[in-house]
Amino acid sequence: MHITTLIDNSEGQAGLTNEWGLSLHLEANGRKILFDTGSTSAFASNAQKLNIDLRDVEAAVLSHGHYDHGGGLGAFFSANDDAPLYLRTTADGDHYYRMPFIRRYIGLDKNVLQANGGRLRWLSEDTEVAPGIHALTSIPITELRLYVEKKIMVKEGERLVPDAFKHELALVVKESDGISVMTGCGHLGVLNMVQAAKAKWPDEPIKAVIGGFHAVSNPITKGMASSPSGIEHMAERFKVLGCQRVISGHCTGKKASAILKKVLKDDHDVLATGKVFDI
Image 1 (cartoon, rainbow, N blue to C red):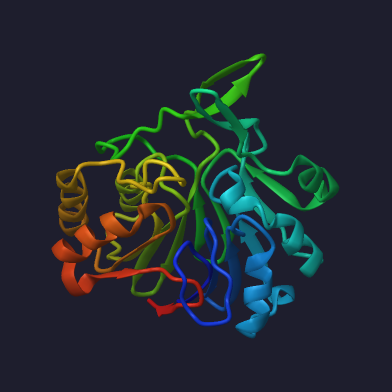
Image 2 (cartoon, helix red, strand yellow):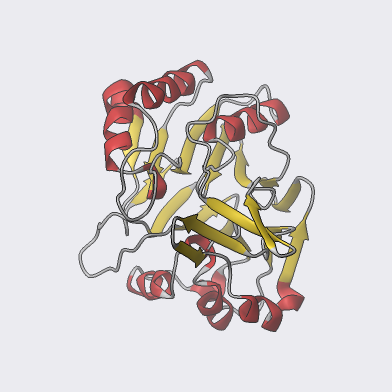
């Protein structure tokens, strides 16, 4: 599998735009897949500069219903006339970030979804979106989550209630030599996503875990949401679960990624806008 980071928080290749968000272009099993679209249309501009033609994308997958992963959907639908978008049911919910005196909408642009309704594939169960490329919707909570978010809410009726992230999925790419697990933010716990993949393919080695691991407390201060020992525990669990490579980015944050590097050493790498990986 060949991965190109179209958008990440971290600045990478000169001349590209970085932002708070995530977008990955995948080439695997002879298919081209887009995983998330960042916060804005910047991922599409970066793709053009990286000589990636979004018209060739055969399917897009949305990790969950937040703006920093689906904010560029309008640009994708404009650039690509055919590819379906796979997303969880309720990804179009009214999602908010709430702090004292602050209530900010962080969901998807519903006008974009409505205008492209015929291309949306709503998922309520694990689904193979392309040969060997699977969207996992069943993610049991079997591992201690690094950070249980209390400020991210969803509107139910007239009330805001804590988001249970039933709109989140993980993407698993199964190749002849093993599986790779991709996470958008890992709100449900990146270790739970790895466990879900491991349960589905118990005999397959885990080649890589790639994406956001939700170790940043909020996008403004970018402080760690966990103690250093919590990050170290996650790194050790990656080892126990047999994850050969761990590539962190987006909401993992630089401080947590540095701890992962300290524990995992050469088995760890970080995402950056424009950076490519061969898995």
